[in-house]
Length: 340
Ligand code: PMP
Image 1 (cartoon, rainbow, N blue to C red):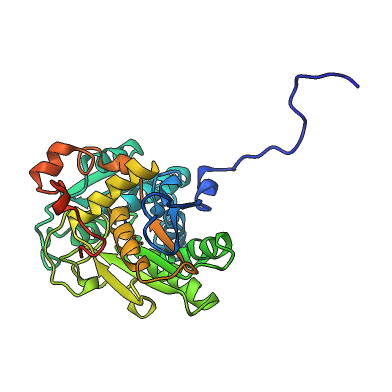
Image 2 (spheres, protein in one colour; image 1 turned 180 degrees about the vertical axis):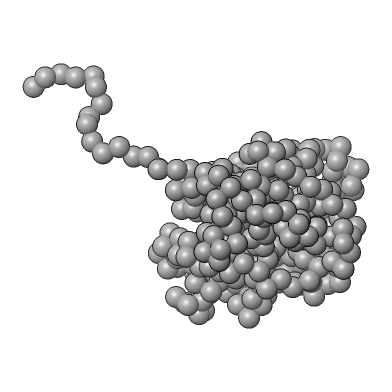
């Protein structure tokens, strides 16, 4: 037999475009952090999508929906209000499909997330986060106005576009069911547009109505029954109910404050080696609080929406944390699992 140093000739493995590399994110067991709760606790690693967040999943489908409706034609412009991640997902799909992008964000969005959007070639418009939803300066109103004014522009509107929850119904839900071999008993996620939790919950409750769906929400958001007020965690919470949130699918919404959210995100990085944004900390705090009530027969899946690389100047910056009174100072001041 002829000796060879050449690799064996077999099937090549590659994706036709980066869009095909979206989804199928792994589930990872939490070991140290979840050692004092009875269930198996798994986290779904959405930061492993090509753009670093769960929102990569919806980008191509939001665009396809607009194309099908005849709202977006070749060379057109996408205008979307976003906290950043949907912008990244749309920008990736737009790069491949040849659309121009304008993203409208509030001044609360981290500098890193703004720069990332510009890196994909998008324009970024910043609005005051103090503007309420009846103000012309409110970021969603600005996006809709720009979409009307600019010829060939369209606003996919992740808050009402049915392709948002439909994507999670078709991918996130089935992946969790498949990867837990149907053993998942609770799913925990933060709520921004509601697309992730509503679409995933619809699938999971269809295959097993006993699965509990738990929302994680900052104080100052309507999902947990609060009146609107500012908070620091990005991408979750809302000042009014969007069309894509279906409360009938959510069994309970737990309220988690900024300090707990950032504390648990920091622990994820330091104790499990998983770098995430603050909203992952919110979901984790809610998931661990809920898991305390469960048994060793339960399997809890907590969705971690994005990478911590978008927040190095904020939650991973001690000065910013101190300035915003978010540091956990002493043992007695440690946020507990029930710090809601
Ligand atoms: N976390 C982060 C960081 C986000 O950007 C988003 C999306 N805004 C969410 C959570 C919530 O996802 P959804 O909009 O699907 O509810």
